[in-house]
Length: 416
Ligand code: UD1
Image (cartoon, rainbow, N blue to C red; front, side, top):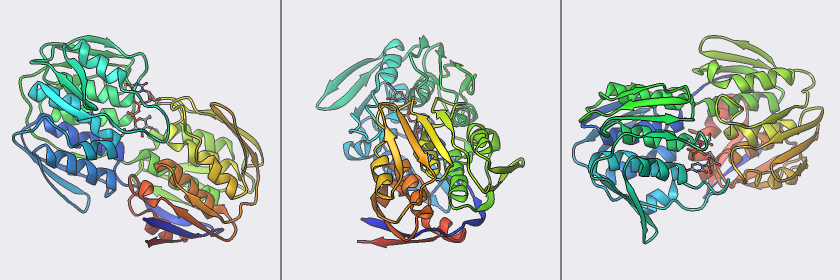
């Protein structure tokens, strides 16, 4: 079990370069299961979720070689039974269902385990597969999907689920005829997957809008691709500068992907200078409070909710945040109270009174973004903090302690 020891109140400064997006890399890896041959991915983050997904792909018959941000994946024949332990350890592994169903006509995928941020049902994925002609049964806690050949369908999602959009998009690439997904998610990572699938020979258009159209083809080949920068990692470091009263540069970011965050921190008083692939941020003498709700892209991302709430502890006044995407994503606020934060939580909303002089404490991360938020809190706090549960942070942030050290923070990793 790893912990971070944080000595707070160091003003951060300097430049941080952003890695490839976790939520794109994982899905590109999965999309390779649809093809044939050797794929080369660049700008792949060195995080445990990527390694877990590599384990899933290997168990399904792919060869994976991963070194310094480059991944080579070789796919020839593929199995349809996913390893239960790996699926349970990472929810994104349910994304193999679409490709396996398209390629093999069947898939057995363990039901993903519980999650710390909400219920996370899979009904939108499963109903999409059914509309394409699949039958889904639950056997021994596994989803078993069967469809000798999927056919195209006109599918309207009841909610723009990111994972379901990607899963149905991938399944439809080799289905008979045309599939249309309406009320599709519009996240930038979905555009990445569309481009990748098209390089493999698929016919997908519309990603980035709420209607995606896929014309099925007989088979798919291999492709090379570079993953887009991680907008959530970029946002987290931007907030790290602000919470310590610092200033610095976020490099290798696509500013267009973090517009809602840039608007919000600008309204809070942050000084911003935006270039094509970089953002310079400076702290104002006093941060203003805010009101915001999370929403699917292009709204304010739920994956930055814990981090921005933590920044609110340093704003002058009362902030209010409403979580509209997940139904249980305020667990980390109990930990922020240990630092002395003044926070009230009602069902979907959190209210923060600031500014508060935070004091170091022993904290426990319950999930990935909660972990990032607790590190931000510890960076702002007077004295020393311990953040336990760093394995959650390692799922999605490559060497976070080293990047923070390079910006002047005092953060050390200890292993027990
Ligand atoms: C993805 C991201 C995650 C991000 C989330 C929302 C990955 C690996 N993860 O997760 O970091 O927080 O998008 O931006 O890409 N829902 C249903 N039924 C379904 C599917 C989803 O009710 O069949 C609900 C979920 O419970 C949740 C909401 O829809 O409340 C959003 O989920 P979804 O967009 O599917 O998120 P993920 O793809 O799981």
